[in-house]
Length: 203
Image (cartoon, rainbow, N blue to C red; front, side, top):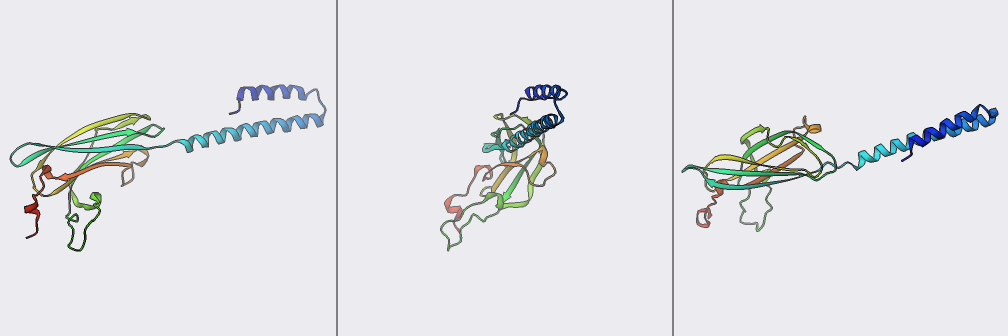
């Protein structure tokens, strides 16, 4: 980048010389000064644009789900969310929403299919079982900064049913958008209780 101090010193020296030269020489020096100023301005502009282009906003999120007994009819879900700013610019998380969803039975294979990809986010059944904003994990995250939180929830047992837990994050610039900036999620059988092969077999 151009050294602005040296540039200004050069302009000042050229300006002092103007009064000792003829008009043609003065005009030539004036053009040189204008050229230097334009070049400096263009360099500063390119530098700022390159800095903007080099800014990368990226978050790595991970959700982990574990279960523990709670009572005869309920269990406790521990939804651990880990976030990591893997970009090169500071990000402010201004909103976090926690939700839980029942999933439909689209994972079941019809007789004419052998394999089917599962898309849990597309299997969610509205409305959500629960959905609320939380103040956990809010704040500014510098490049490389990490954080985590364990969300503990009591869940009613429903053996053989699927559930998905989700944490949605909005950065400050996306706060008005319906879709979050980033999302962490995990799914499992409710309370970790799947049907046995005999129970799952169609009758």
